[in-house]
Length: 257
Image 1 (spheres, rainbow, N blue to C red):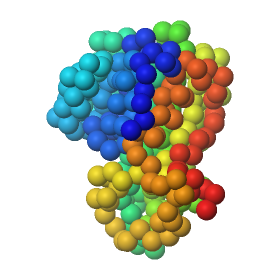
Image 2 (tube, rainbow, N blue to C red):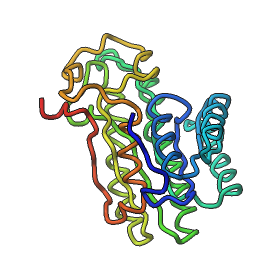
Image 3 (cartoon, rainbow, N blue to C red):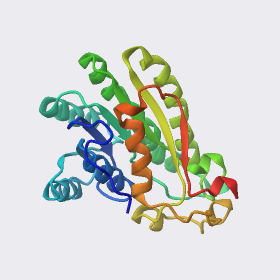
């Protein structure tokens, strides 16, 4: 397990909202941020699990809260984010981690699946980024936004990922545009590309067998959720003030195979 020293990254209870953080990679991100001293808001469509994850962090002596949030519903996003701001003020950081990753072969693709996945992975990320950026700009203290895309964008792909990969590629465009527009407000925007991580979402993904280059074993081994969390921690921290519009692969060295 990656050890995290509280305060080592300059956190003094700054609020960071992490979407999809009631399970999988999101939990690893939330744990690492909380251990570093951030106040982590667990934002998830599953309100019960979000509350349980936040409670576990509180029991461990960290700062945490939770909010139920449906990224496919703009009203839910706006309402939930307003609740967070009313309680905690403008967040210092936003991590767009939530995502759907079922597989569907291109030749069998449907508009329904495209719309379902993109409603969360790209449209939802855009909407909550808008809300976070508005709050950060109004607060005038700067901020950090980190988008969690996928190493599928650099070749670690399997069959059935046409919709998923396209939705994650949209985050790269969102990063670039948001980084440019928000730089004047000292708000940075960056992207992380996770490699293979054994999470309930990945294991339970529906669709054809995941055959393709993404099945190659990385030389450093499979990543764990906290490995992604460690990269997020740096990019969300005050230490990364001069880093924006950058893409970082956390793939266990897959890209050199």
